[in-house]
Amino acid sequence: MCGIVGYIGPKKALPILMNSLGRLEYRGYDSSGIAVLANGVPESVLTVVKEKGKLSRLRDKLQRQELNGFAGIGHTRWATHGEPSERNAHPHLDCTRKIALVHNGIIENYAELKSRLSAKGHRFQSDTDTEVAVHLVEHHCAEGLKSGKKDGVLGAFQKAVSEMEGFFAFVLLSVYEPGAIYVFKRSNPLVIGIGDGENFVASDAPAVLSYTNRMIYLDDNEFARVTAKAVEVRRADTLALVRKAVTRISWTISQAEKAGFPHFMLKEIHEQPQVVETILKEKLRAGKIWFDSIDQRVESRLKKIEKIHLVSCGTAYHAGLVANYMIGECARLPVEATVSSEFRYEDPIVGPKDLVILITQSGETADTLAALREAKLKGAFTLGIVNVVGSTIARESDCVIYTHAGPEIGVASTKAYLAQLLTLALFSIYIGKVRGQLSPGQMREYIRWLQKLPGQVRETLAQQSRIKQCARLLFEKKNFLYLGRGFNFPTALEGALKLKEITYSHAHGYPAGEMKHGPIALIDSNQPVICLSPASKTYDKMVSNIQEIRARQGIIVSVATRGDAEMEKISRATFFIPRTLEIFSPILTVIPLQLFAYFVAVLNKRDVDQPRNLAKSVTVE
Ligand code: F6R
Image 1 (cartoon, protein in one colour):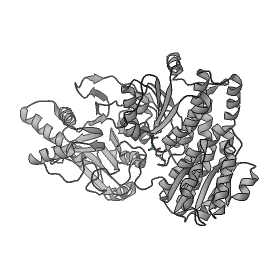
Image 2 (cartoon, rainbow, N blue to C red):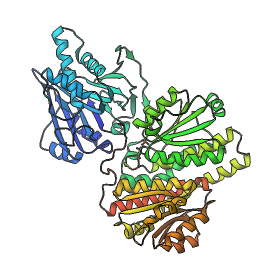
Image 3 (cartoon, protein in one colour):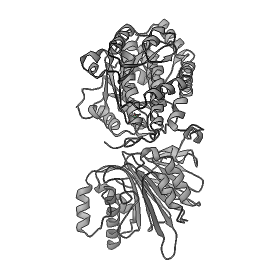
């Protein structure tokens, strides 16, 4: 959840660290800090500056200091152990202030290690689990020196890591070896950016994309020693050298910037036509659906699958719920969508005849990663539907399909969700065909409607001012109900999630048919109800639900198919989507809900891109 960075090279480290941290702030923003190492005689000096709150506060504080070192590390925090404060912010230092360390993750046995180290005389300054790690390295450095062993910082770091339980990414800088930054990864992401005579370290690639697009992705239980000129990766157990591939990232830095929009979220909502175009270009060729990663071997395995599990969290879980309906329609296979945190602990009934699909934007979500590992242990075939190239889930899945949404910075997921929906729609049609459930005529019909989607997404976005007007009408309400049926029941859940995440108002998504079993008690003249009512098998049922809400004076906002005059008549406000097949309707109906949540949040002066208590990449349990 935290963001970590490092730099070593011929330039001043501080501006590079601050720029890179700025691109990681979405991962955590309750405090931040940097450590810069200035070479000196007789000894180099580590300077640490930390501040509570957003990165801008650290930036202000740093204006009053001059830090000229050429190596440094930085951190932006999302608190797990210890309240957000300057004292608990990273980097943390050892007793002698010779080692500085930043961390993303949790050290599960920190309490036991802390009492052992305290008994040996170590003094702790913070309430964090992280501080234990730096004292542990200090302890092993001192032991090494005492015994005359020459295994240096790496040896001490290795011993420290072997005593810690949990999951972590660490970056360490010390006066003992001023020319090197050490990193270690277990479960949490770490990437090394390869420059020309300089190197970078970060939690994810966009953080250093303005300096280099060449990346080395560390695997679990690997150390790296990063100097200005070289990167040496070693296994944690034997310290044997590992050869690593350098991956070239195709995202550009402008994709990771706001491009004139007031917020990343609005920019990302407006990138959706392009995302849809890219996915179709990539996966729809010569009237056929292709996935580069699905070869003959994978295809023959998919033919034998008896059940599909869709496993994911949050917004990605909603994509899984939509795919439940999509796969049902196209492939007539049993499907089950489950949240990862349930799947991983429920001793899931899966085996070699099951396909487990992990849906994730970041590819690093701790619960989804654990679910993947559980599914693999049980012999299931695993497929990652992932946005971030080279992420852990992408690498560990048996097969990966990338969603090509580009970097998503806004904490509330928008374009990544649309990309998941479209990718899952294509996969559903593909699996339906492979399993002989779809005729060539049906395939042609699906493809004909798919090709209309980029224009239809644009058309839906064009209603922005109408949606803003509706937000003006309702932004002061504190409770919202979202209703939908079938393919658009998950859209109701997603609309409600978007609203509560960024406005902090309560919102509840519900299957419309269940309204009379309880939520109808909420309806009065003060209650906004957002009704997903596009043309569908259950359209008439939705109309009946809406009439029941009207009879109780509820404020109805509907999302309907263009030309639906009846819906416009019975609703206070209506947002339209172009006509499409029901299976593709969730790709369009969610767009007005994203914009609605956005404008309600802006009118309430919320921090849209960095809502309170949230982080983009949930790498802790
Ligand atoms: C909501 C949101 C989260 C994520 C969830 C899973 O807007 O962004 O609910 O969808 O944390 O994250 P990924 O997709 O990275 O596994």
